[in-house]
Image: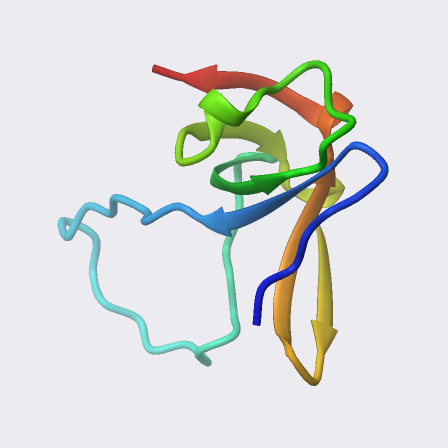
Length: 93
């Protein structure tokens, strides 16, 4: 199911995380996340037509966002990560 965002919202995907395997292994629940950095890297999947800070050319690019600004809409059709365009700190190139 696709979502076409409106009102200057962007639809995001989680970007793959790079982890180092040098730390000892500790078994934790699957949904447990240890975050020490308030920022996350996400991939732009779709943008609202009224966005003026990001463009169609930015779709597929990675962006930096504060994780607490990303909202997850968990619906019967799936989970959708949404953020308003003014919460994008920058596009990684």
